Image (cartoon, rainbow, N blue to C red; front, side):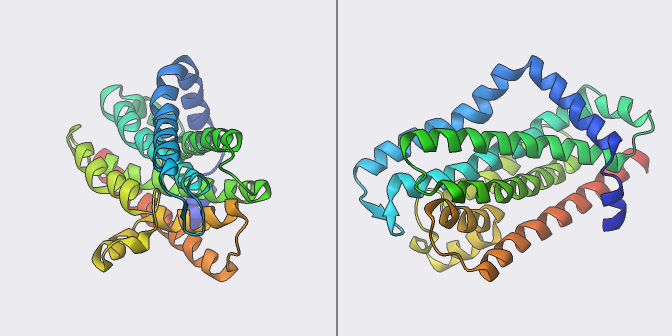
Length: 263
């Protein structure tokens, strides 16, 4: 679908889909928070205080300040990925919510934009929870950088949500999500520089890491929250990669859903 058509589809109908998911989430808020917020916070506590007790500095900063921005990105990635796969597939295949929505004037693109924006909202919210805890624990040394990091994290959440929709668009059973989380989510968790520098890996692992969007996201968020110097052109390159992947993933998911629903 052309880019201008997708932009036009950001309207009151796509917002209505987003709002519908918000209202449902309010009724299921506490179980959702347990999965999407507490999991990253547990990892932050374990690694921040566990490894932080034996590691002096990593990447020129204390370990807690190093790991907090990584966990911000991980929280955005995990929450957006979970919502755009498991939850979206339930609405698409089991609950037949999509069938009901598509019987209204809402188009498939508008429906997908609503789903994607809701998944991205959950991702950004989870990242904000990590930011709050990081500020309380003293893991965010440069507060103005956090404000600059917020739109970057939102862009990352959009990318992760769009990639999750690709998996959902191809899913015929729940089994495919085991592959998605094993070969997509987990590598980003361990290889993208969340807990230590990417340069510590062998060259072939580094090549894989730089193909993953979270590596590029962390490369921008971490210097911002630390108040370190960040070349604007390098940052633009990282963000351009994340944005391009988001557009490509959403386009592919739109094509696949269109084939499944209307062909």
